[in-house]
Length: 309
Ligand SMILES: *[C@@H]1O[C@H](CO)[C@@H](O)[C@H](O)[C@H]1NC(C)=O
Ligand SMILES: *[C@@H]1O[C@H](CO)[C@@H](O)[C@H](O)[C@H]1NC(C)=O
Ligand SMILES: *[C@@H]1O[C@H](CO)[C@@H](O)[C@H](O)[C@H]1NC(C)=O
Ligand SMILES: *[C@@H]1O[C@H](CO)[C@@H](O)[C@H](O)[C@H]1NC(C)=O
Ligand SMILES: *[C@@H]1O[C@H](CO)[C@@H](O)[C@H](O)[C@H]1NC(C)=O
Image (cartoon, rainbow, N blue to C red; front, side, top):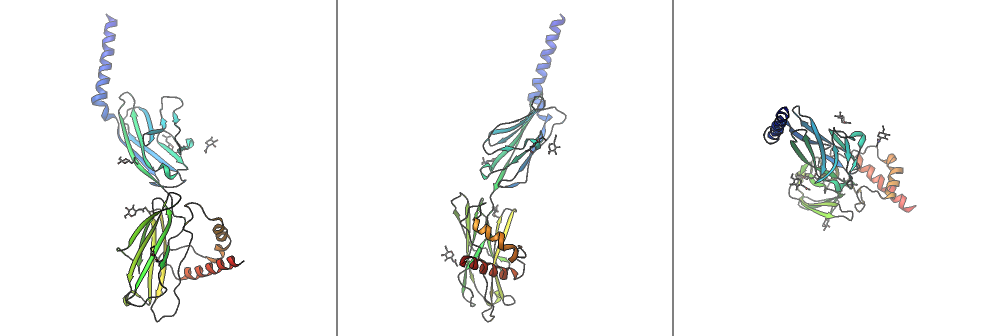
């Protein structure tokens, strides 16, 4: 008699927990969110994948992290060991900085760019929620953009043909040409693959030169290269009114063929030995003075001296 009563009660418990799974369990877990810091990862850098949730008092059964459909890290508080790493090419989990709330990934390569997910499961009810975020791993251009014009000086009425290119990156850098600080909307942009599987960008603009473009005798063409908000570099060319004498100087930092992330060792040597002596400031913002041109001229003279040695 007592035995039957006990069996009955167990059945009631089973039925009620099943009931919880299908009806009540869903409310025991909510707001599962995956937060990635930083939101854009620079190649070889680290990223924290933070998985926040509101358990509403329910016990935690597991938290799983995925890249695409492949699980690479699991936290199960009731098992030993509590954390497990599943080998996945290119995934390096920093175990010292990973726990049930976040995973730290090191040495991220551009091939890892993709969807990452975290999935939380509550105990008893086995209610599960998942959140997915796209994580971009970028490779920044190695060199500053290079801006060229077809001539050194222009008469009003002539067309100034400007080209600007940015060294290989992933994703390709965005390039904008501006005249006296005003971005040109009608410019042609093209993307070109590089050997290293990256893309370099070129933009071309035809500018009709009018007298009013020479503000205080100077017409400034600039080109800005950006990759999201993690990279911003510019190059500029100044043109003077036809009467004024100073010869325009160009910024020509060459070396576009070098793969992203690697430096030609001669350029590196050159920079190591000569740059500290020649350049007092490496601030290439649009608003700085004309000093950079002089530095650049001296840089090129030094480079010529080096070649002649
Ligand atoms: C992780 O911590 C252990 C013990 O504190 C230490 O020996 C090890 O070097 C650490 N590993 C990393 C990658 O920091
Ligand atoms: C997980 O690790 C992070 C960073 O090391 C730390 O801030 C956080 O408090 C840890 N969380 C738990 C639940 O241990
Ligand atoms: C990432 O997930 C979104 C939807 O969540 C999907 O549209 C996209 O195709 C996925 N991207 C990759 C690279 O799998
Ligand atoms: C700009 O690029 C175009 C297309 O490659 C080329 O024909 C032109 O000569 C270039 N102009 C300058 C000033 O480099
Ligand atoms: C380039 O610009 C477009 C439009 O503003 C933007 O959607 C895109 O994210 C930018 N790409 C990069 C790599 O900065």
